[in-house]
Image (cartoon, rainbow, N blue to C red; front, side):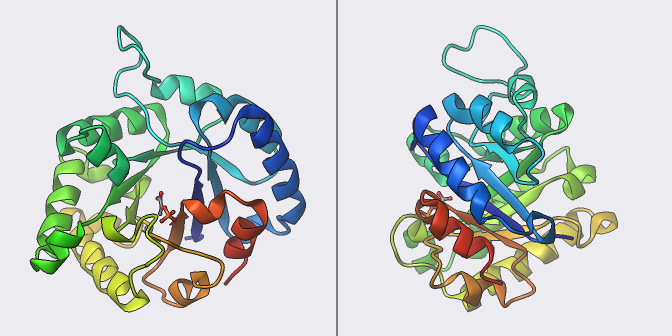
Length: 247
Ligand code: PEP
């Protein structure tokens, strides 16, 4: 399985800034086939990004989607719409969506179902808050998030990637230690093999939370870490390219 390095731009970059970024980034990407590289711009930039990335080997993903195909859902974007502009991936259940937009595990499950139906590969984000970690609840929280998200779609765990993103590490400048990440990744790996032993080892488990060019290699040294989900440090093409080629 190729390792996946994904950039989550969050609510950053206009269409013209997206063009400028991708022009620079594609010049820096030498061997896209050696790993999977993914850019997740905001909705408004997906179309132009899709056109520019076509044939480059760099993949396109969205940061969210609705679970219906169409309908009276003002302000929402559906999986078929994402598919048509060239998306192959969708980030689902990012902690900012859970915390700021009230996304429940039930809604996240519906979104995963909708992505799979459309042939989009979801990246399911899970992670504990600082209070939960300090209360010794990390594994319980992760288990609940994973089990509820995958409810009814257990047979498709090979068509999903999971990003372990401790909430306290996102955007804080303080990543988890690689050892802490490995511990949680190992736990998720065991949980997945309980959920569906047939798909053992076929779900990538990424780490996310304050990954930078300076620390990416420390994470990627560990075979339990199958890739990275990068926020802030993916906004600069040079820094993201350094992360992509850090291992
Ligand atoms: C993220 O948004 O998924 C993320 C990991 O952000 P950052 O790298 O900025 O911590």
